[in-house]
Length: 335
Image 1 (tube, rainbow, N blue to C red):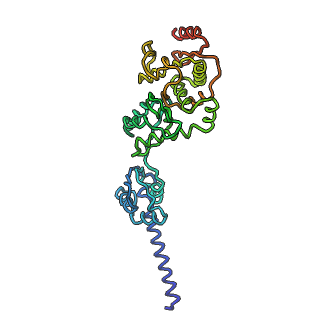
Image 2 (image 1 turned 45 degrees about the horizontal axis):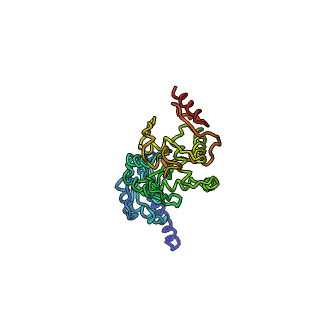
Image 3 (image 1 turned 30 degrees about the vertical axis):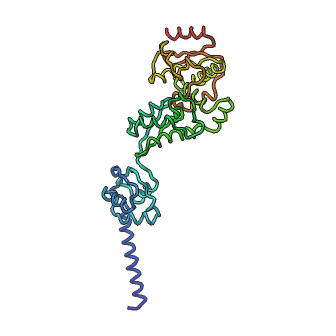
């Protein structure tokens, strides 16, 4: 056998070996089951190495080979980028797909929606109900949280410095998120949503961001119909300009800690800095966390001469320019 022939045969053998190895590696990277595998959760602990994660995946029946998992993670330069957390995987995922998910940190999350007009207390209760944290701890943090300068409130009577700045939205929360992180997430979202144009408009009106949010929180709690928001905002601004007390029922409900359908005279006499029947001007701080619509209503109020309003049984408000008209409107809605 000539040298050239022997070399040719060895080339054939090497090609066959490479094909076999390639076929084996390909099969080992493929899903354990297909096309539709069941879902399961794995928990990757902080500090786990790629081979340890591979062992965890193999124990769960998610991959066929720890060695192949480690080699591919190394080859892709992701062996040191696999992130800790809880992940939802399916048994029809390839090794490459699993590695990509772990590297991107696409963790298991829970969704929480903060409705417009919720108070710090209501948000704290919701967080605890969804087992995302302690209501008490969240409220403690909200008392003094002022990560942005405009949140600073030197009024000693303010209950929660974060009240008004926890933006109503839907948040994706990963397991292990702390109460501090939840609070920071909501405040950061507010700072993002309260745009530069809004800040410029507030300044043009002679309002601070805090003033706008206090008024918006009143509008959010008073208005039940979208169209009423800018009109109610206009009424409050008219009252401030005329040196009249705001007399917002919503501030009394904030003091009481629950919504009361009809306030008594005694309710309006409750001694509290938040009582806008007893104290002139704005309350010490916001009484709820308003959404964008209520904020825009304050920034762009409807210009009218109205200084009174009363709600009917359907939630629509009736507006008046004089006290006599207001009394007549009250009689009308009570029929």
